[in-house]
Length: 141
Image (cartoon, rainbow, N blue to C red; front, side, top):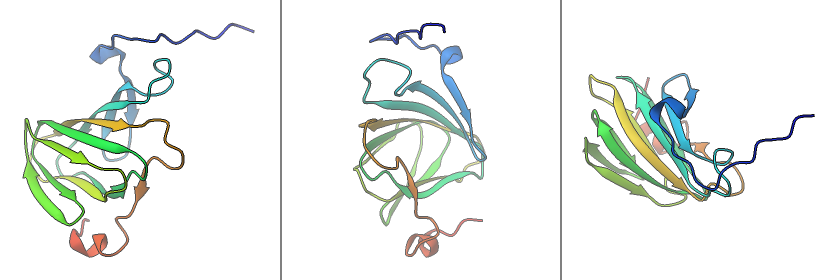
């Protein structure tokens, strides 16, 4: 049996080295999460949402999140407040707050998301987009 490679306590991560996760409506490039470095409690991801895609209403029950827009335009919701955000804009979302990101622009939306703590117990994300009032607040095909 081969010995497992020990994870470093620090790490440089180039774009080519990011762990890629392809989902039905977007692509994620992971730069930091458990399993990439030793004892991290931070999730750091770059997300790419093509035009017309969304991360519909959801919550992170025990994690705070910061979203930083790199390019494109997003209709960003936190609870029942909506803002149109673009490059250079940041959104802070406290743990347990319902939020959503809709790419309503014509180009790919790219943003960085930082979530903590990565070690929070229970589900990381809970979709609430089919529940009221979220279902009626922002219908989506």
